[in-house]
Structures are given as structure tokens and as C-alpha cells.
Length: 100
Image 1 (spheres, rainbow, N blue to C red):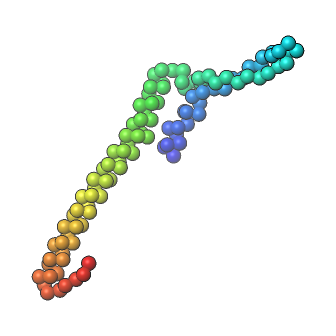
Image 2: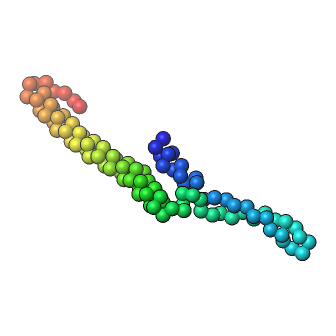
Image 3: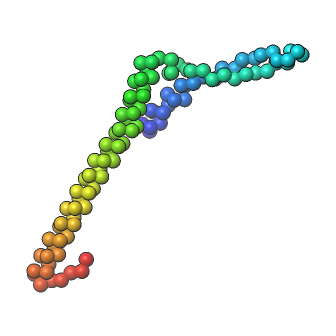
């Protein structure tokens, strides 16, 4: 949902204008469409703020979250491996042999 809200201003970044022109000696009319900047792209401060907010929320925040979760997962896997080694040695010392 947050991604949709941050991408919403991109739909209003450009505006399509249509112009009717007389073409040829017989005066035939032709419609020409032109792409121009909309209200969002007009203000430099608004555009800069939007780009920085998009960069922070859509790129940096997911990357930091992914790195944090990855570090925690690797730590838990190492802890689990150490726990299994200790538990296996304790079981052997008690005279119980288990196959993992």
C-alpha cells in the first residue's frame, strides 16, 4: 500500500495536451498530441523532496530491513548449530546416542 502511495505522484508528472492543426492545401485538420510536464514536475523543491522521500522509503528502508533480517538469521543459524553440537555431545556422554 505504501508503495502504491509513493508511486501515485508519478501518474501526474506529465500532462497530455492536444492541438488541432490545418494540414495540406485542402485545409484538412489533424490532431497532434504533445507531452508536457504536469503540476508535480513544475516545482523543483517538490520534485526534490519527492525523489528523496522515494529513495528513503522505497530503496533504503527495504535494503536496511533485509540486511538486518539477514544478520539476525545468520546469527540464529550459528546459535542453532552450536546448540546441536552441545546437545549431541551431552547425549553421547549420558550413554544415549541419537542420529540427527
